[in-house]
Amino acid sequence: MAKTVIVSCGTAIATSTVAAKAIEEACKAAGIDVVTKQCKAAEIKNFVDGADLIVTTSQVRFDPGIPVINGLAFLTGIGKDKVIEEIIATLKG
Amino acid sequence: MDSFLVGLKALFDTLGSTVMLPIIIFVFALVLGTKPGKAFRSAVIIGVAFIGINLIIGLMWGSIDGVAKAMVANAGIERDIIDVGWPAAAAIAFGTDVGLWVIPVALLVNIVLLALRLTKTLNVDVWNFWHFAFAGSLVYAATGNLTLGIASAAVAAALMLFFADWTAPAVQDFYNLPGISIPHGTSTAYVALAIPINLLLDRIPGLKDLDADPDAIERRFGPTFGDPMVMGLIIGIILGLIGYFGEFASAGFIATFGKILLLGVNLAAVMVLLPRMVSILMEGLIPISEAAREFMQKRASGREVYIGLDSAILIGHPAVISASLVLVPIAILLSIILPGNRMLLFADLAIFPFVIALTGPVTKGNVVRMIIIGTLIIIVGFYLGNAMAPAMTDAAANAGFAFPEGASQISSVGDGFIWIPWAFMVLGGGLGWIGVILFTVVMAVFWYFYKKNTAAWEAAAGGPAAGD
View (spheres, each protein chain N blue to C red):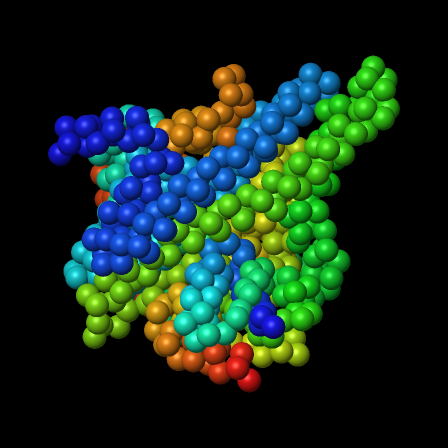
């Protein structure tokens, strides 16, 4: 079954699109079937059900009960490979 | 140079931005070293995004223009400037003749200023170069001089590096984002206004210690004012009631009621669909922005630089979210009661977190103060938005967004409420080269004082003071 990754940022438009596309590419290369869902930071609560992982370029302020990974590296380019490794390791669980 | 630009411009005008921008993006992506297949796909998807945005703007237009006219006829409320929202403003800015040039021009400005050690910011947020294009497009719309428009965009890009440097320690400390700065037009513009107001509030007894609980505000306001779709529905129904109230008697209850509800659902659809379309545009820009980032980082290696990012990364902060939620009803109220205002607030109700994000460090996260400062920004903004509407409507036409003959004008909160494009429009549009040079000189003077008194400036913006 496909893994669901929530990708959140301030608007669900700009920075989360960058992170979501990068995650989709990396997972495809690693042979993981993945679906990304973009949302605003304030909406994460509505998306958590059935999701496997949250990657956020802004902040998560509550305990969502699933792993949260900071996706700032997708924007800065610094440490991006490490974050991708972390995401893949989490999804392979 | 000018005849070359004029020749290119004739070609662009014939083909239109839906065709031209993809071609430019394709060539530019290849130059920066993107693989042809990837460059081609992202180029085409940008054209697709433009078509999608145009469709949704058409839907918004068909819905709002009719009710705006009915409001004038039936209720005497004249609101003929329609807020198309920052997603449309960004598409317009990238789609004008200035927008076609903004990416290489802003990158060049950044490289030069980094090399001269005038800035520490490496702006990799290529998407938000649209703010510079927006300012330049207004100058171009006012003067018809493309070189002047591009020069204005270049100066706007430099100004944003200055603002990003100045606010960087505040951002890094308050939002806990080491090494990051925010060269974002909508967010940095009003820091200079927030500082004196905050100092003034420090002196007012009673107000001085007032604060509010962000979580309580979010619980109360979040479900309605935090959801653009619900806001679209509510606004549609309210506008419909004002505009079409008289038709209950003449056209029958069911027909009129249906018309009002349909308006609500149409506007809810715009709120959901417009951001999706812009997200497609973003997808097309990713290869360019990644290639540009690598290109820039190679040239800045071994230096202490701030990575300049979108203020979207700040928006999760509770104080920012809750203060912006309260600003939504305040802004709607202001759009009704402000004397002389002709702008109908609609598509940009979700932008307020961006407008006040950098007042967070200035006020140390005080929600009440952020609301007060935000309200003042919005009041100023309405008048700037009204003033910029004709030029913005011209810029939209230049970008190939077709508005019906005799239709209303357009504006937006981002960046229609922002003083930077307004100042460019007044100075560059009114005085031509002299105006743009004047802007540059004033900027250089402030930059000089910032460089002389860096610590004090940065502390005023909310950065950690010496000894903190």
